[in-house]
Length: 190
Image: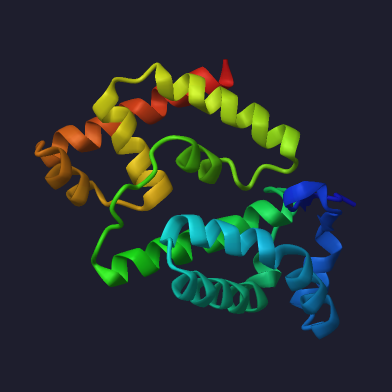
């Protein structure tokens, strides 16, 4: 049996795949344990994206509703529990930003964006290694394509929003992102 697990911040105990399987069987005790183990870390991710406590709390609640409803969809062969949950929170937070229709000022391109992009890594050591590799590989990209990738993946900007932001044709922005992702994949795999 695969014991895929994700670690929460600060080196807490791993979140075993068995816990999410119990949640899938509608085990309320398991759901409470999952919440207690992961909510502080997931709230921090939502807060970094949204920068508003009340919105981050709403996103966290919506995310846990989604975890409860979709627990049976979790596949330990595809990744760790924590990575799966971080993805749910990230998507919910980006949806919240889009619903507001307003972007936050000062999107925090540096450390904060990199921290967000690697938030689902299994351990602090993994996050550090992934962060250094990602920082290196992003540094190899030209400035505007690098910013376009970060805005798109860390902050949920659409291609249309990026084209308007950079005052650049939509096709150019799409090419920047596609080529940049190809270059990042080669760099990170190499």
